[in-house]
Length: 428
Image 1 (tube, rainbow, N blue to C red):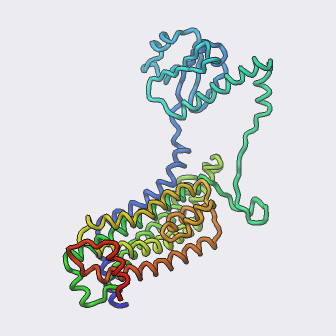
Image 2 (tube, rainbow, N blue to C red):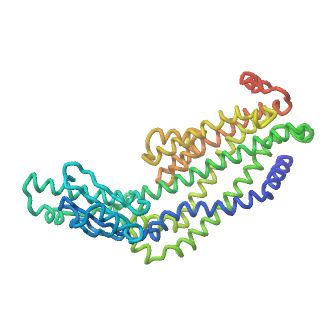
Image 3 (spheres, helix red, strand yellow):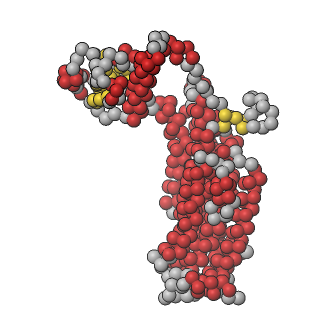
């Protein structure tokens, strides 16, 4: 253990002193906080300037029914032709655009929107939605002879606010925890992407380090003082310590942000006047205990996932003489990780689907898939079983990888075939 500790300390100090490590450690929390906070900030403060749209309605049924909002103001100018309007309401007029409606709009459904600057998808959808409702109501009036249809629809209009809670068996909304699929989606994708990057970046670091030491014959000297297994475990644990140190620093900074920055950005008055989705985002990001729990799970799955894949990367690095030769093994190792990312996207549609459940139990995909499922409030026993299987698989893969490593580090000049790797595993 003393020899392994010395190797761990060397690997840690060699990487923790690099400027890239320090810069990444400081910038990543800003990126994470930005990913979580930016949508909420844009919802609060990102509203665009109010746009003025001139409506030329030749059908006579639309212009007076267009409803202005904070985003757009409609003004009818039905006495103008399209050509006259384009000359009068040009770029210098301050008008955003001209909405031209033909006489046969009820039959054709074709409408022209002439803008003086780039339009937005949200504005176009807003205009289309209003036009669709107006024309459909007009057709209903004509077909079924309903004179007061607008008043009837206004009388029965009922806005629905969906409040989602997690069942705790009491049925009391004051005691049940409020949840939101949108918030869980944001947290799941941020945590999943973070774990994906850690496994890929630090796993590649293990492979590169082994290949460099093997090609420079440094390993030949080091194995005179320690066994190949001690060397491999020291390297894996050393780089794992670097990853966990980085995660710990990120956790402290993000938790501090949830404690102090979120309340400063979103005051109680702002949160109270926001919609339910935004209130949920503010409440989740400001819950220090919840954020701490997520980082605790993240650290456990990062450690287990990294140890599992690092042992494979170490075995791959010992079997080749250059990083380029290691790409054939690297591609095979990365396939389950990429598959996990694909499955992770399906988690957001149904976190309890069979494919999501089994992918979060299979050790090669479980770290990424399970960490994406956790924000959705899955049962604790599933997390415990997933972790147990993951760490057991790490022990098994380390034992197999060590058999390849102990022989591979002394092999030079030839890239081994899969059958040769199998023989190395069987050798005593």
